[in-house]
Length: 257
Image 1: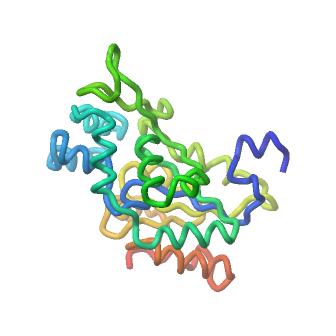
Image 2: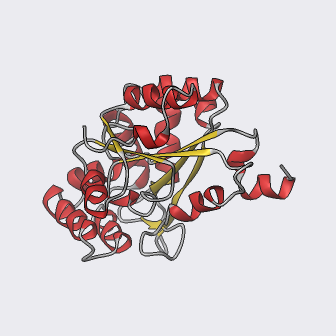
């Protein structure tokens, strides 16, 4: 690969045959950090779920709904991080998947509708700082409100990755890989669970949608091929079979299990 292409598509740096794109909150973690903050520090679960439903059925953009959620949180950002470190846990199978993927030269790229400082802090806590630094993360950011510090009450707000209605249109990150010439193109996977993953749902060769979550309903309604998972142990088993040639991505897309 040329150096310019490697910079534009960093997951190609080691010339992998497979790339695993994944959501973070509620996918790599067992809880969604943004939902947890909204439910416990913001306007609560009822309004959050109503906002998610509006996004799922196209009545509202994710960008606006998510900003309302986070704007309802007045807690200083450093205190939010401290609380999340105590309350958010890693998917029980992710560490094993992470180690296996590293051994097999399968880059893991985190595409998140959340905020990078939160993701970095949680991954460093769960995997160790050195391991966490190896993961490419594409997400939104955090900035102070005018005249304030992020670490004071009402002092922070989300800064979106792009101008799309998603705030972070994950398809824009995946599509350049999908459009590579056949002889250069790796097999692409994606794992997700909710409304922030709608933009990515149709972009990869195999979509893993978390059982019982909004992404499953969307895929069934839009007739997007997928397979469900409960945790990363199931993802690991399926990806292992595909890598070994025991099954294909098409055969693995079994829908709701």
